[in-house]
Image (tube, rainbow, N blue to C red; front, side, top):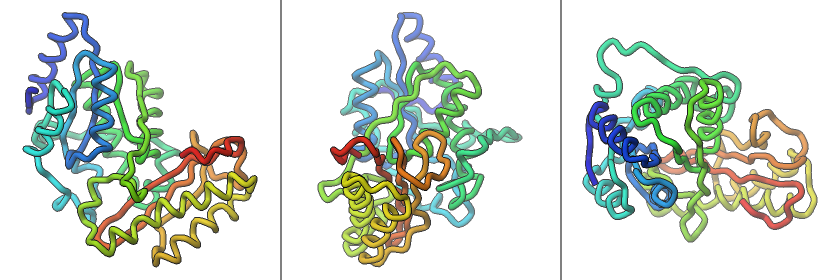
Length: 288
């Protein structure tokens, strides 16, 4: 595996692969790899001839009071894990390579960025996500890019970016990877002490409760979200948001009809965590 730190270097490597008729897969990440990241790399490795993983803690998607300075970083460990998954290129640029002096462009996607994490973290968050992803697509020019379903709203934002700007890249959303106790894997889980780690399992249990209720035929959004809030309250968690929204448009729904996204965000101990389940009115299997 090659570690490349410059845009010119990545472009040259991709051009060489293209000349040989190779397909290119991209996994955008901020590092601190866990099994969720590795599942994206596995999917990219299975589908593509050349696999590029970006490792860049993107400063523009963090707010003034968020965890940019303490976000977990361990490039040596990440590089070893990526190499073990058969990644060809780890693109690990410095911030100045992505955002040089006088950089003045921001991409804003309206509508779907105004709710959930957009409302909770602020407009800057998805502006930063959209801008850096657009830059990565321009640099790597992948055939396919892989994202985790844990960041369900981010997946929708990236899909809208691709659609609206007519970008020639397919977006693959891979399933959430969970710990044995159900906690969604996240780089921020390292912030949790033992007590908070146990408390955090309530997020998935709350979503499971709503899903189980939906499987009985309950369709009321109020009833479904109330069942989830009961589990969170029992664990001493007050969510930043817990909402049932259309799985494609993120418009609010008052009744589960077809498929909807039940999304939650909450601060547990020193970490801000997110999770989600897809609820289906016609699927009684409880699949998430």
